[in-house]
Image (tube, rainbow, N blue to C red; front, side, top):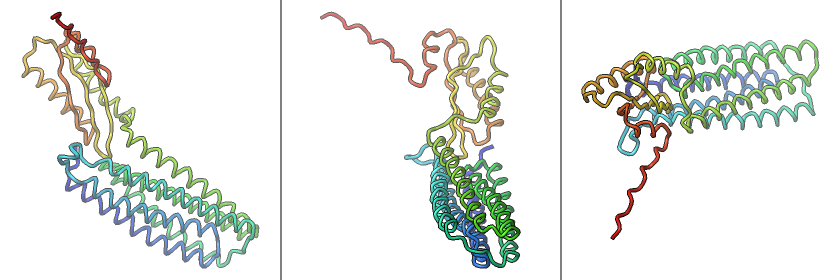
Length: 315
């Protein structure tokens, strides 16, 4: 089932929720850092600042992606979501660099952590906010097939696990008195953030490069085609790609040349309906060809070979 444009536009409310969560957690984590002086908690607060910028980008790109197709963008604006996730990945890498720089300074000049108990309570509250919002965004992203919302949700969940590591480090410092453990954990947090940023950027790049649908989605599509395949009906040149929440499928359908146009149209119409049932937000295009025509078997590649030029007549 395709999500209509008004429903797509309503997804921006989830981006506003992410913005509110980021503002809340920035305040809580900054307060926790000021109470304790923990560079690990500072790194956590810096990542929440990245969350805020990423949520704002997601809000902007969701608005663009919800625009209906027009004359210049006949396939819609769905790929705008990849710009949001790509920029988010870049911001994550910048935040990781800042965290590593701060942690290295603290590693060389360790400082004691103060008011550990109160700082941990404040940071735990911030993590619970992120966890709750991440679950809401993940459900919404999967339900509406929004890559931008899913990326934002996974980013928030990474923040939750990062916070868990930082909280553990602060607790261990309080128990052992080893001050350098705090910046070491902060550096580990930075490394984890780098890995997350790289994955998000890679996913965005693959989306912009028109990567094929996921294997399980292709299997569902092939199952539809297999139900109709027989000695009189064959398929080739199946191609898939995804642009944001929308999927695009093209396939050539080969039937006997003696079939009427009405019979061929009824077949491809049934195939398209069944494909859209298993692939939500799918736009499917079929090309009907004569099974016994040799030319029909020469266009399986992306670029169909040109017919040989006709010989020139002698003057």
